[in-house]
Every structure is written in structure tokens, then in C-alpha cells.
Length: 511
Image 1 (cartoon, rainbow, N blue to C red):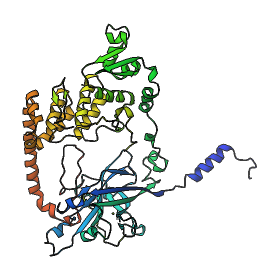
Image 2 (cartoon, rainbow, N blue to C red; image 1 turned 135 degrees about the horizontal axis):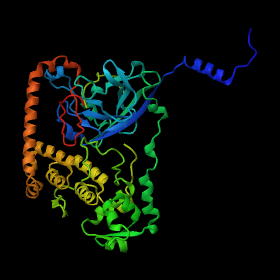
Image 3 (cartoon, rainbow, N blue to C red; image 1 turned 90 degrees about the vertical axis):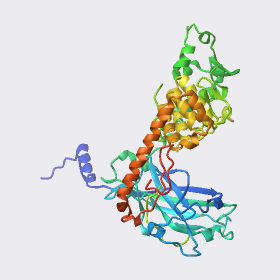
Image 4 (tube, rainbow, N blue to C red; image 1 turned 30 degrees about the vertical axis):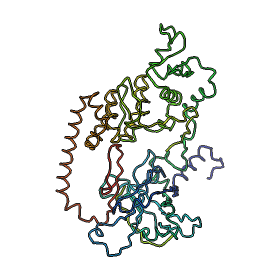
């Protein structure tokens, strides 16, 4: 007999749960992005060579890093390179986009039989700069054609991690002044992407928290450093100590200075027999005023004026050490003895191998201070002296990215004298690869005098490079028949190395 007793809330909940447990849902959307690349001095790029690209800056869409690659002299396939170009050939300029990296939360990654890939619709436009927009040349995949797959496996020699057109536009069309693509020796390329992202389902819901539709840009909110820095801007009258550098006075808060630096804490601790502790005035003679101004900015904001410090400090591939303008620029780090001195139908190519956070405005009191090599070197020395280990790591990372022929030797000596081991390794690697040029600089002579022990380390690095090159040449010779087999599908790429001292060629493998 049917019961007249109404169901309880618990029974209703169980029934509802049972009904819901037989349902699931996946949602596929697109994450869009756009990047515009302006290339000035086009006439100087002609003759750069087949397969040699001009790269845009890195840009991020959907948690992935991309770069545009424009080939002024074209990008012929392997089969085409084995044939002589016809007489009076009107060559094409090529245009590609390459996937070169990913952030901690990349979107749209699909685990397929060919590995980790992303799917996207790409549109490339050569802009008609006359302003009419009627003659823009745009090529790209339409929705009914399906999205293009690009591999995330940048280290796989068979991976196809770029997409574009070998025959994007004929150079005669690009250079015709009546078309408006080349104006004042400048071309404008616009790129649009729709990254396909699927949410839900067992294969796409491995990390429910990574749903891009529910993500929050935490970086858009103020940090502790943003708020503490206001103490100097809005509450300067509440300071209780003063730092005097080269006759200039810098009011500060002793609690903040002591918390950030053990060296300053020792100077300001209550009851100390030091004059600084009793008078509340710290006179510093071993640092320049502009350097100390930057130091104060970091102490209060935990970042440098250009935003350095908000993101990881190891993007260059070198991990900074633990605690511990060019070489002709005037000035010296006296305590260390370092002198600083552009729509049309076309055939689409297959993908092939090839190669952020809030932006801060400079505070008014830091206008005119250039964070060049020399200033960063000064900051590194000051950070080491005043026990600001995070600032020292940031400076070390920046200097790794700034190593060149003129600064390699002086920066190497600086790294040696300040126990900056990652920076030292970067400078050794760069110097060993450009030894003849570096040896001609004044900085190298200074390094020989101030750090003679570095000569033996440099010699060992050069020997190691020679050994590695011999092994690579032997391996390439042994594998050359295999390397040519089936290679017609692979587009020779442009490699972007994460290491600051690696200068990648345009004839290498995948990114």
C-alpha cells in the first residue's frame, strides 16, 4: 500500500543528487587576444636572407607566450631550397606566429596522441596605413575549416609549434607605394588569435580551479608594497629617522627600515652606543644618492620602479644566488673597484617548427634615474652591503639579461666580488662565446687586474665549450641521414632561448 507520508528533506536531497549524478556538461569557448607589431626601417632588412625572421616582443594570450615572426626574404621549404629560384622571381614575404612558452596556468591544453597541443584560429593582417582599411591583406583560418593545432612540446624536434604562411604577400605588392602597406619605411602587422578552451568533462576538468571563466586577476589588486609605499608619499610627517647621503636627507620609518635590513636595524636599534641609534640620523658615505633613492623605493614597495620584483626573478634561466650604462659610463663602485662604463585568399601552410602583470609608472622622485647596467651594478653592491637579499637577486637577474660585449667583463668581476654565483656563470658563458670581442674592451683589462683568478675559470669554460661543440658536430654528422628523412613537413624555425647569454640562430629546430 502506498504510503501517505511525505518524503523527508534528506530523501529529497538524495533523489536530487541521484538525478544530477547522471548528467554532465562541457563548455567550449574561445579566449581572444590581439598583438600589433610595427617594423620600422624595412628597407634595411632586405637581403637578410631566406628563413631569417624579424621577431616581435613576446605577448601572452590564454596563459601561453607567443611571438610573431616576419620573414622579409621569405621562408622557403626544404624542397624549395634545393631548387634555384626562377629568373625575375617575385619573392614572397612570410609571416608566422610561434608558441614559445607558457605560464603557470595555461588554458586550452589538449592531451592528444601527438602530445600536448593547443587549438586556435589565427588571423594575420598587413595593415593599409592610408587609413581607408579597404586594402588590408588578411589571411587566417575560418571557423568551418577547424582550428589549427600547435604543439606545446618546444623541445621535440618533430613538434610543430608555429603556424602561418610562407606566401603571405609578394614583396612587389608590399613595397608598391600606391597600396599603402609601406609608409615611411614602416609596415604594420596585426595579429588576432582565438584560443579554443574546453571546460568540463573528465579530460578537461583535471584542475577545476583552472576554469578561465571563473579566474580572478589577483595581480590587478594592490599589494602590500603598494600600500606601504604610501607611507612615504602620504605620511611623510610621521617618519622618525633620517638617512643622509651626499648631503641629501631621506626621511624614513625606523620600524620599516629595521624590518627590511639587518644592517639598518643594527644602526637604529634602541639603546645602541652608535650615534645613529641615539640621534636618529644615519649618515652613509659608501653609496650614491640616486642609488639610495632606488634602495628606499625597494624597501618600501618590494619592487623596482619598472615593476621588477612583481614576477619571478628567474625568467632568464639563471637562479639568483642566495644571501651572501655600459662599460664606458662614468662612475665607479668604489668599495668594489668596479668601473662601469599589415583580406585575401591564399594557401595556408602547415604548422611547423619555429620559435606581464601591471605596469607601474615611475614615481616623480625617481624621474631621471635610468635603470641601466651601471645603476643596476650599483644597486647590486648596495643590496649586498645592506643585506637586502631579494633586491640582490633581482639585480642579479637583470644583469644576466643585460650582458653584452661591453659589459661582460666588468659584470663578471662584479659578480665575483659580490658572490653572485648565477650572474658569474652567465658572464663566464657569454665571455667564453665572445672571447675575442670581450678581450678588446677596457672592462676585460680591469677584470684581469682586479680578479686575476677569473682567467683560469674562463679558460676552463672555453675548453668546455669547445668540447661540447665537438660532441655536437659528431652527433650531427652521425645523424644527418635521419635528419633529412621526412623533413619536408617541418618548417625550419627560429629558436628563442630562455638563457640571457644564448644567441639563437634562425636555422635551428623548434623553439
